[in-house]
Amino acid sequence: MKTLKIAIQKSGRLNEKSVELLKNCGLSFENYKSSLISPVSNFPLEILFLRDDDIPEYVQDGIADLGIVGENVIRETEVEVSYLQRLGFGKCSLKIAVPNNNSIQHLDQLNGKAIATTYPVILGKFLKEKNIQADIRTISGSVEISPGLGLSDAICDLVSTGGTLKSNGLVPFADVMSSEAVLIGRKGSENEELVKELIQRIQSVLRAKE
Ligand code: PRT
Ligand code: ZN
Image (cartoon, rainbow, N blue to C red):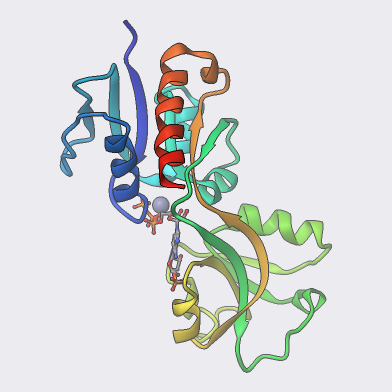
């Protein structure tokens, strides 16, 4: 019989909730932090623990059948996968924010401005839709400090409580996308029996939480 593989985040904001969801589905496995693969003893499934950024491609390429990852990561990596189920955790919004002493009030005023982000693909599409020509500065982290350092006029980053923006003297200015953790599958995998069974288990766990 085939063994399915599901990729989840190894450590970070989605790890704990992903593990909890799978355990609540009745799946029995060791949550080894040091091992990349954990077999499930009571279902033909293996759990792959990966960096979240790699999950969409692993699923697209068929290395994993399923994955749990933030929609923001899927949109940024531009992969072709099926969205199977929204999972209700890891909720956040990708927002453009500006320094709170700034006079920027309309999107148009971003024309010619520099915006720092770790999401250049999503931001690029958003600006194109709005017909705004801004300079996207792609950086790999600590986006919030870039206006204070004079590296950008605005930022585009994920926000959940808003505390990080506030403590860096920034105010949210425009919503680019909202995101939550989703279950994704390889295109066509939703027709496979084992995948269907796992989706059903996940859906009943989610329903029980409502
Ligand atoms: O190591 P790996 O590459 O796997 O993890 P990572 O560091 O890239 O991601 P991680 O663990 O930080 O986030 C995983 C996913 O959680 C993201 O892709 C989102 O889908 C989701 N998520 C939910 C968030 C947040 N909320 C969030 N607040 N991801 C990041 N943040 C960061 C944000 O970038 C900012 O620095 O938290 C800060 C803002 O938080 P607040 O509460 O101050 O607004
Ligand atoms: Zn990541």
